[in-house]
Length: 77
Image (cartoon, rainbow, N blue to C red):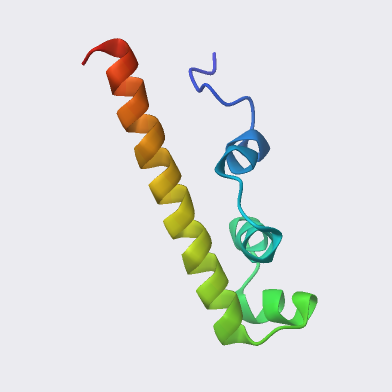
């Protein structure tokens, strides 16, 4: 039984509303691609891949912190 409010990882990422330029490198990274492989696929420099992945992680962290705070307020925790 899945206790997650998200039915899949894709729902989770769609919720974060990441811009495509950050979304694609982040997804490739979570799929197991190495930074240099992502750079080759997307035809961008490796440093840009690393930056975009880090920015996506920061956006997700921020969005989930908002969600967590809202969830606690709704439960009156």
